[in-house]
Image (tube, rainbow, N blue to C red; front, top):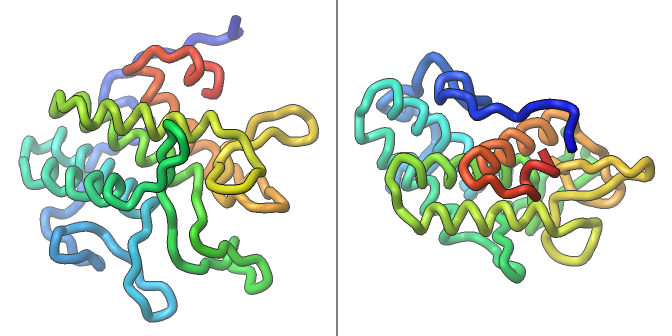
Length: 210
């Protein structure tokens, strides 16, 4: 039993909701499909966390305006994530295939492919919300597979985004590598994605993690 209540909040009060939308014309870096990209060391790359976050932002804009362009752009972000997923058993993970300095430190590199609980949480929220809005079973299945990634505990070989520290506390790792560093904002954003999944699925494992 938990000493608190997990509430099903209305859309405008959920963690990823904002009172404003994104611009209809995306002036930031994107490809011909409208999918957000990043430039890293002069190279244009897919960045799953950026794409998942932008997808959720577009769904927020769709709710505010009813403009289908935002829905279609959110779906484009989701399709890119699905296309590039790495599957381990029942779990999906979303790889970043470029080298990145963890916290900007030159001696602390995330080497490709690397994964992030923050990207996992945003992707989970994106699939959950697309399932709600479109009614398409494929997004429900994508959410189930993405949530399964939170059940694969690390550190270990292959993809992982969750670990337990020396005091027995569960961490959703924004930067999962040895040594783990328990970045708080990534942990919180990932937990919000788990909340979205629990809200729609009722899965007791999601409640336990959240």
